[in-house]
Length: 149
Image (tube, rainbow, N blue to C red):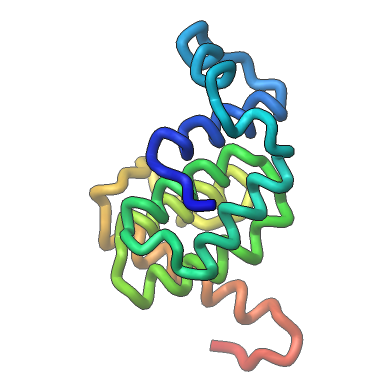
């Protein structure tokens, strides 16, 4: 199943609802009218991950929406998937997707941004790229059998 922009918003709200986040009346209306509300959160998560891995979401904008929705899941088990996607988006030079994944990792208490940064913005492309490279470099060093970079 390929989600569209509005359905990613629905998925994000559904994930937040599962995590007991309170929503506005408007957001509750979106949740109530969502065709996705009958899909268990773990299945919806798996469908989104599958779509990313299989290239169903062809544009950077689609993948940014997918990463954003998944960031609302609050599932530490997504960290390896986010790392893989970060490497892919970094290599493809997709700065908006890189930023969104860094945010998702940060929400999962992964030290993805440099601690000395006093602002986080999608338009700080060079800083975001450097943070992504540093984060991935640290991760590869912590894996047994990987040579130190």
